[in-house]
Length: 232
Image (cartoon, rainbow, N blue to C red):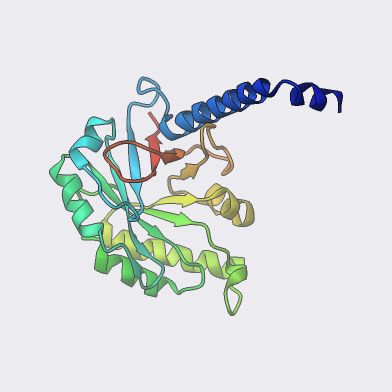
């Protein structure tokens, strides 16, 4: 109470405090929006474009330090990114290696999802290995999909799309998914893990790709992107 009365009688102090808090907030926002590890520590860095971006300037993106691009291509059994083909062509034209991301739906059958993937993603050995985002829970499905069923369908899906691409897929389990199913820890495929700023270890084995900042901003892209590094 005494401190409150002290500040009440010195209104200028409130302005100073507000200014300091605002400055700290701006500094933290800038750091969150622009931070990525040093290039000498992780020479291979890139972005994941989800399809929600209004515009992407690929040459500027490359100039900003992106050495590769992953693009969301398909979602579940019927979802797709309508910008995928154009983004793929633009990345290639800029000389950027590019790969496709599929967002896995534990409630849909493997053949439905692989059919969606192969109609969108071309069979091209020049592409990076496909990445599969694992986040949903079989508990939310109707009827419920038990862990053993989910894993069986997921393995079938992986085998099907790998026959199409000719590349072993990279698994991208979120911390929530991995904590529930521990699939990444038991799988033999490479991992893409996600955790801002701090190196993730939630799968219990080394990662190949790491999302270091899920709100990275740069002039080449409208809106935030996922900034990703590859293991040296």
